[in-house]
Image 1 (cartoon, rainbow, N blue to C red):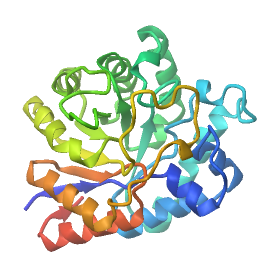
Image 2: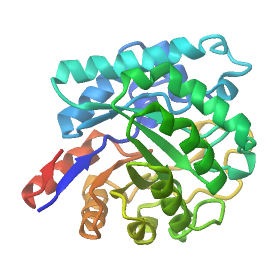
Image 3: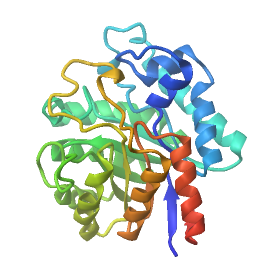
Image 4: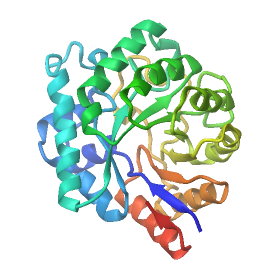
Length: 298
């Protein structure tokens, strides 16, 4: 049997659910600011479920996301707070790694809005400089185009930390990034530039098998962590919508999601977890299945 790295699940929707707050354009960032300790509680729930990595709540803390909000001047403080919460959960649990989550600039799923290369590299590097010495690895998440991949890898790799490139693929054709470019090219780029792993994230579970097939030839460790949204339409996120603009699937409970995750492992994936609209129960069921199948969770 294989050694499997088990990531955690979604943070933003879990925060909204547990806090009872109405969603805002700042999503998990606003809830973290309003409810200190809640992010650590969720990290702790994922560790208890069997996850071995806490993905820090840094995904959406970009200057462009904070612009025009009450959090605009708290860029560095919010990153520090997110890392404090992850470290608290890890220390309480007694083990685990912390991943810095580097989300896309401007908007998720919108490769057409990604900034020019030099601007993007500078902005990504500014984020990484705030927390690279406090994380064990960096996950460049929801990468939607080759231009995005090039910029985020150029910014992240000089940190000296292992860098995982996690791409969001078309929900109907996992061979393609949301830009329409080939997932295989992104995987090749990750291998050429020196990334430590390549993954597909925040896409429909049904799209992941094709994405995994596209990644495998690059020769890197690979894996997937899907969302449980209904299909993300091409015009989503045009102007900072709130999370209630997306609909959760009712057919993607822990059992069904774990079926998908175990099928990805059968394809050769060695890194699995969950993304938006998955929670600790999903991760716990994956952990249970992995142990029952004789896999070692690392």
